[in-house]
Structure formats: C-alpha cells, structure tokens
Image (cartoon, rainbow, N blue to C red):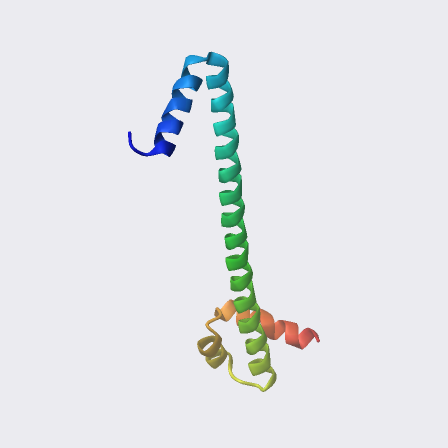
Length: 101
C-alpha cells in the first residue's frame, strides 16, 4: 500500500480485530456514531415535513380568507368555488360563519 493513511487504518484495524475487547469497543463506538447520524437525519426529515405542513396550512388559510372576502362582496358561491379551489361544502361553511358574525 502506498497511501500512508490507508496503511495506518489497515494496521489499526488489524490490531483492533485481534483483541476482542478492542473489537467490542470499536463496534460500540460505530453504533453510537451511526445512531447519532440517524438521529440527525430523522430530525432533518421531521423539520422538512413540518415546514411543508405549515406551508400547506398557510395556503389553505389564505384560500379561506379570500373566499370570505369574496362572499362579503356578495359573489355567488359557484364563482367563489372556482376562484379559490375550495369545496362547495367548505364555502357554504364559511358563508354560515359570516352569517353568525
């Protein structure tokens, strides 16, 4: 082997693999490192999912606010459905909410 780092690593591995205690300690440390990496990756994925969910909720709230504004200027329900993309049932619920205010 020409690369000193590879030769060092191979030499260290040979020493570790001969001693059962060293091998056990090495495996335990590797498990710790892999567990920590998995924890970080899981946290990143959860954060990304939360951000996407928050974005979806924000979009939904904006659509509902637009629908309320359109209903307040007496736009017909069918047009509000077309403009906002909300369901007829949701628009009707929002319209009832307006009547209660």
